[in-house]
Length: 183
Image (cartoon, one colour):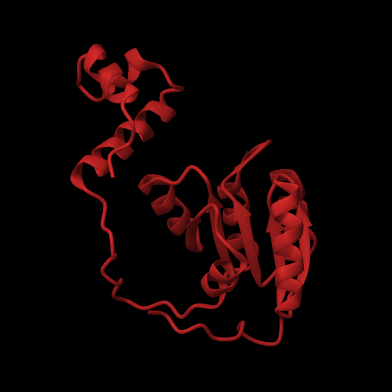
């Protein structure tokens, strides 16, 4: 398991970008208690403005915001301040967005609901080259379901277009989409 270290260097600036105001204010208070100087933003536009004003050393960014994707914010943060550490939070987690977030410079990717301790540990964790074996790895059925959901979302929830891209019959896809996610 990664051993948490105090934030790198003396600067403990943190930007929290989340449109869930109650969650944002709770996280803000919790991180201030841990010694961070916190700035908050409710949207992609506010997050980008805060970064252009003063790029923080750390960031916690929601993936889906009212005016766009938190990936735009993490990308801008890494461009303006390459040494920053950003964590993406989402209630709509899937493998593809996690990979994209990490490629754009996110240090970690957490599914909501995440508590302040999890977020703090993700912000200050030491990255290891070898990932730990997950306690409950995803089943092959779950991986397939995640892939289908990703394509479905990318096709604007259009069943016919998704079925065509997946080279599958439309009715088969409809049956799969109607079922609950496998474990």
